[in-house]
Image (cartoon, rainbow, N blue to C red; front, side, top):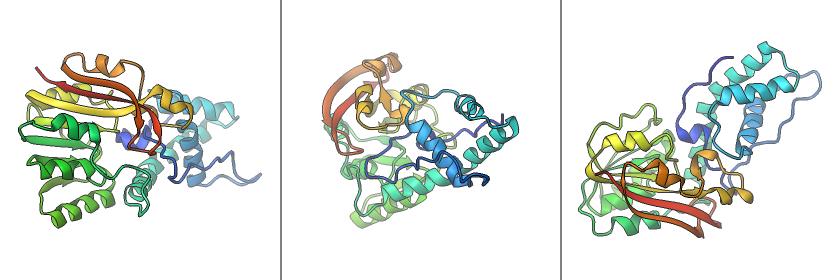
Length: 277
């Protein structure tokens, strides 16, 4: 099998937002007609969104699904290659649509937990991972933080830059995937992981924070997937965040029913504020 390229979190294990364009339930093209690249990709997305937890070896697991459908090894390899190519293009377009929609199905205001736990902190250097259209980065900049943010959704980043100019604050932004962005070592006072995951970032965040710096996380609890398909990267089991960030000093942890920032539905969310010793 041809390995899928390593992609940013938003490309593989991301929130399926109610109201956003849904993945098509494609089972195959008309008899005798090969499915289009987009159909192949949408079918994959539909499968991925239905997985109950993180998929650690996507090409192997989905390759087995395709093989079970009776496809040849060559066709399985071709479809995995198509999926890898479509992921970067389609997910970028998908999130640009979602994050710049005139009728957004996500909270366009700063995350309430972030606002609460940073109140009273001395502003320093902050990194917003997967900044989207800048709701959190813009807020922090208004509070005096020197904010850097990155996201592969170029139109969303452009919207953040435009809003920063309008309100008179400065942001340093990059249109990059997480595997392209250098977190650095001991250079941030605050790192924000708001609905972008945490498993793949925990070690990088620890190394990138200055001693005394903190990380703020908000995501969905596993229970939230009972009514809505949600990508596994932003879904956590009970107390899982505490284990992921056990090297940190836990300042605050919440497992509560609240309106999620994405989907805007009452659900179960988990929140963490932790400090590097």
